[in-house]
Image 1 (cartoon, rainbow, N blue to C red):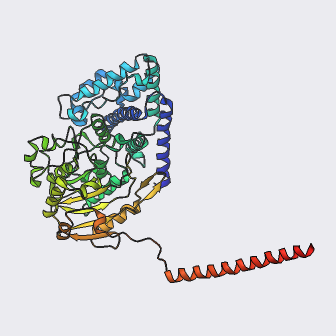
Image 2 (image 1 turned 90 degrees about the vertical axis):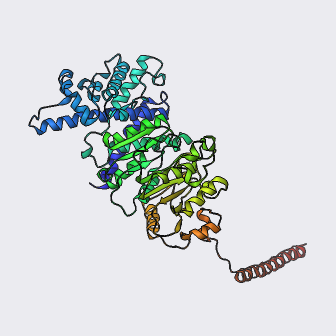
Length: 526
């Protein structure tokens, strides 16, 4: 289908989201609103997903009149166990999104109805293998919150608007849309509010273009991988890019991640479902990756991507156990307690497969600071783990204007050198921010793949030369900046100045003569 059709669908979807935002304006803060609309979209999605699955199965047997949404609850109960086994959850027909919507305006206890439905959906997975993936998914969709209104009546009025708005979105029949409608709505909402959320938004939302660059760096030369991991997965956009680029079937063993923020952890799991990733194909954990990693039994990973929180505090040497942790002990030193950046890098390296690639966004300070961070860089270089360092443009991320970098790690390199790429000018300016274009991403990947010197852009540097620079990994140390200052011909400039002075003197003499002539004429008249 033509691109203009795709953009038309996307614009229509975005307008629908803005309409709901206008309807709730003044009652629900933007960042909280995002959670309400995503939660309600998720409710609609799993309702339609289950209905479509059951209807398709019945229609295949010849029962074309079957419609799960019209089935009596007592009749649906007979299939509960089998449905939970295959889909991971269960929803009674009366609890489906479309049936709740039909009665919403006349339901004086709509908030209680919705609360009961959400609890029932989560409870349906209890005691099953899908329990971890469904527990607490509706936690942030608080239908009794004062944010929706001071009275039950006001809350229910806004809940009706929310239900109606989500119902009107053209999200049904994903196969009939040229865009991934649910996924696109999610990304639009995240970008829509991340810019207003300051640092808290930037911590767990990586711009889509940066996500694509990280993914393609980790995938260079591959058409499939065993599994992908993000130790600070946020809302899951980096993980999901692998499904978008490779196709989810080519991520053979699934998507793994861990997130410390409970709200973001819930959003990440919702995001997986909204992008049609089955509950059996992802494992997202909640907790502190550095001190309590939850995927020991799943490592190593063939692809690791991450945009970890910048320079956060961690236990470091304040925890005597960590120096003996096999993830950190090889370097002989821990990342500083005030800056955990290098701890995320060491963790990722430890869990990286021998044939794998890790692409990690990092702040420039860790590339040149001394102390423990320098010792960790020495370990990385001496053991030939750093494949490439890429300098990105500034103003790419929400919440910070700093020009970040990407460090690419590999355990099986073809040489004992590090490629440094200066991509600081590979962007276009949009209002007050910069953005990577498809052409920018393609150029960086081309330089990365060729792995050779390119004037003012890339430099392949031996480990010995890096050691001579005190193990500094700053791109500017190795890639010469192009001098864009205009070359001035001094002799030519002096000749021009002399010509101007001579001409100025001549004009001054002419003016003086004219003035004298005028004054002489005036005196004669007297």
